[in-house]
Image (cartoon, rainbow, N blue to C red; front, side, top):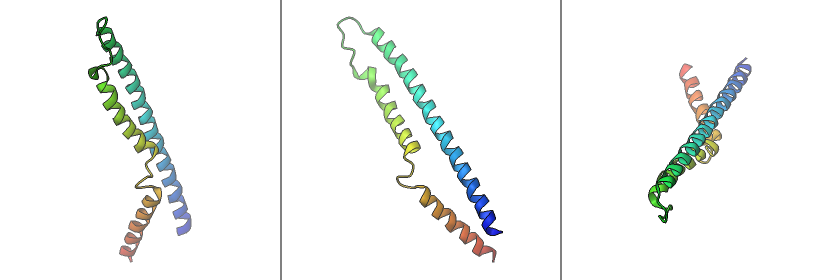
Amino acid sequence: MELIMETKFEKQRRIDRAKRQVKRIKGFYTHLLVYVVINIFILVVNFSRTGLGENTFQWENFSTLIFWGIALLIHAASVFMPNIIFGTEWEDRMIKKYMDKEKQGWK
């Protein structure tokens, strides 16, 4: 009976993990879309305000693009490469460890 319950638990946990990952991916793509739209708007406004003969490649015109881009890269790394440090194997070991501790406490 315990094996069947464990299997149901594992299946539900995998489903929950997959749902959480899909939500994180959707959040990243939403972030990416907002980044692209807002930065295109900012660049169009900045370029339209520069006069003839003025250098359009100025720090002020690209600072938002650069810093927000760095944040977007960090967001992408956290979504698509989450297993670099604390992967699912580590998660599974920690869950098993705490479940075993709880089980021992019940005896």
